[in-house]
Image 1 (cartoon, rainbow, N blue to C red):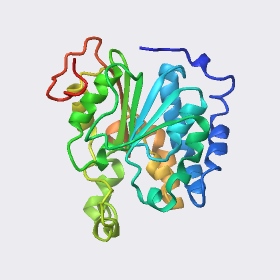
Image 2: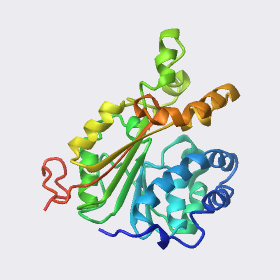
Image 3: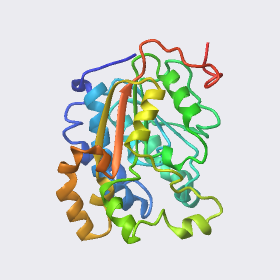
Image 4: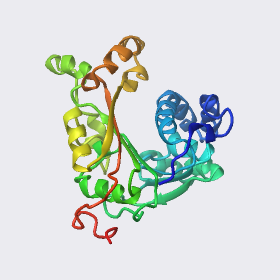
Length: 278
C-alpha cells in the first residue's frame, strides 16, 4: 500500500485546486463545460477529502464517475488515475469521445466496462477506490462488485463511497406534503434505458455496507451539495444556511459519505470474487 503526505502534491496544487479545475472544465465541449463548472465546489470537496488522507502518490480508481472532473483532477495532481465506467449516459451518446479530451490530456487511464459484470483490477493493484453517487443507480446488487473492489485495494487501502440520503431533512418534510417525487417521470418512461436512481440508501444502509466489507477506521460525513447547487435561489440559500449545522447529523444531510480502510488481513469469500481470489 502506497501512502504519502499531502506535501507530495505539486506545490500550490491543493491551494489552487478550484483554479485548476476551472481550467480543466473549460476544455469540455458545448454546454458540458458549464455543467462541470457548476460542479466544481462538490468535486473540490471530494478531492480534499481524499488528498488529506492519502496525498497524491497513489493509484486511484473512480468507479462510475463518468466524464466528471474527479478522475481528471486526480491525474492533474499527479495521481495514477483510472476511470471505470460504461460511458453510456446520454451525454456520452450525444458527444462521444470528445467528452474525454481532458482525461486524455492529463493521462487518465479510461477503462470502459460494466463494473458489476467484471471488476477489472486484481489484488492490491490500487490504493484508493471511490464511488461517488454511483451505487444508487445500479439495477442489481453492488455487493459482489464492492467485495471485488476491496480485494483490488489489498490491505489498508482507502475505500470511499457516497450516495444521496433517502431520508434527508428536506424529504422528511416534503414527502407528507407530496413534493418528493422519485426522479423525473420522462427519464423513467420515455428513455429506452433508465439510468436514474434505483434505490437511495440511508445512513444505516451505508454503515451496513461498511461492516459487510469489514472496513476499519470508518468515517461518516454528511454534506448538502444537492441543495446548495440547486436551481432555486431560495433552496440554495436555505441549504447553505443549514449545511454546517446538518453536518453534525449526517443522517439528515442530503448526501452521506463513508470512508474506511480495507482490513489488514483479507479473508473474503471466494464466492464473492472468484476472479480475484488466490
